[in-house]
Image (cartoon, rainbow, N blue to C red; front, side, top):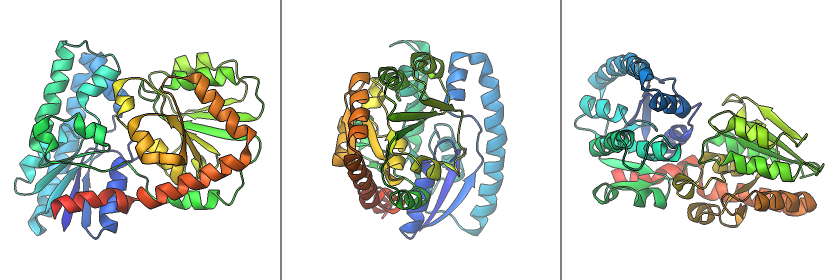
Length: 368
């Protein structure tokens, strides 16, 4: 089966599509990439929603990327028509071009996050405002173009319109092989004092970083716990203010994607998400899968999808509860043996269920 991974996706910012590509290849499919990264992450797109006068920048960059996509697609199509086209994450606009260029191929849309969901979570639109109606229209038009819609949890699937749900498939986010390689090496290192935890993310409301920061403030006097916060975003300044009293917190602007697996594998704990917005209750973030694959204890919020997918291989705390998060980190610092057991359990859980091949196999089942 020949599948084209298509769009303006950026695996450095959103590794989801890289997992699917690796997994489809591991399952025996021939996958070629036709990709022109847009260079605008979720935060930049949100800024455009907040400041509509920036919209011409998005349109211009999209047209430049699309011109490259059209040229390469036409050259490749002369040799062989793809059986399916996988439009990468944040492909709300790319899916229309994919349908135009490949009218006889099966179009797969990786729809992990809806535009309307982003607008609601980031308080960009009221319940009936013009912006929200526009985002819903963008979602509806994108979903209409897809033959198969790919989501990451059953909860995300249930949030789809009923007619779309019938031709959707659930593929967890998972992690690429580099994370598992890093995890195998990391487990050779025993858990020892001080307990080292890491958060990597874009500081969005879904992540609930102020909850982490409040927990760090509670732990300000505990010398056994060190935390590194990686990334920047909407709630970054608030998080720094709330955690300012803890001298054992380090702030890192970003870590290159190539270095990230070994970087995270150097920690005992990987912090997940703790937000209370609706989106936070429907997803399992890539940082949870990556942290588990890297051989770290996953500490994240106790939501239905995370409880189901991570099972006993994680420490779960109530969403929005800094007290429970602080208590979980204290327990791990108190009992290094239990922390080591959870590290190993997390790795085994990820290796059994969330390798690229395991994640992508439902797509080939649908296509078959």
